[in-house]
Length: 440
Image 1 (tube, rainbow, N blue to C red):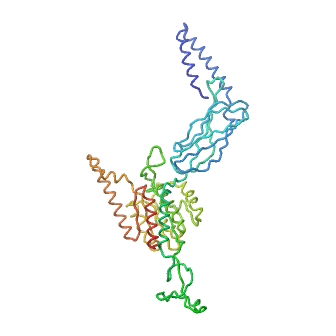
Image 2 (cartoon, rainbow, N blue to C red; image 1 turned 30 degrees about the vertical axis):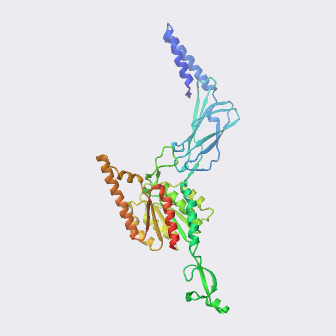
């Protein structure tokens, strides 16, 4: 049973006759009994919330920061008209609006209610419960009941770095135009045959074709277009730290490193697929959490976004040995392996560095890390003693990152350490630089 504000107001008004009555106890008892009888009668006449039936309408998915309307169909299976409120409750991070809906449903009738969600966290959002409150005809009291109604809205990564894609595609076209399309010698894909000219490598002569013709002919070759790019997300504890500013929230609090890494991975995947390369994806901490392998160019981004949407940072240390083994199992041919992790000295010393030679010996490796811009801000503090201590700690942390990056580069690994908003274009530029230099 629930009471309304009208009940409280009537009780407050009843205090006046009690105060003016020559027999206050009797007046109090009479008025209390009358109000109680009215409340009991109102509850009895109210429609039963248990007779309501709910059908969750299909809601699909939404990108982080965008709005989506989730529908709920309410059917009144009782014999009385249902007047009251219904609340379709979601987690606070879903930012549901409005919180309650006024409904008036005739017996045997139905009404649709829509709740607008603007999620501020990526992943699968599920409703908490649907609460129905039925108010009696007197408006004094009613009945209330909550029950769970299954449903789900998948919140996808926003892919904010999409704005950098046109400029990088233009640069890719420029690189393709500058690179020679035909090469003499071995090591690339066969293209065609042509007549021998002075200066050609004699090893490129096709003797069988020459035997069938009057002239000496040589093979020509073209650059391979189906290079393999393997993008690996480290979903361990270092990916949980919030850095930068959340551009999709009204109250910016920063994204986890994992989300910034996802944004960079999507831009690189879109660029590499346009370049004709095969892109595979792997998310790993102690075990493989998600993977996309062998996706076509048209379906690659959709499958990546779907695979990434449910990933969450795990507060455990990543198993680098298992991660490298998973990469080597999937990528048997030479490939570009892009590992998105953090330059955490202690984690890399004990985890990745000992097993990195096995990976870099077979593949070209890029390690991309999201730097925390607040560390740079702290390093400039000199206003008081506390700021100086903060600055010293920030410098110490920066030196650790630079030292571990230098060790990785000496191991033959390319390292990209950039702030959150710059990590995606920096990684794309590194990929294009490799293309331009013919290292892919």
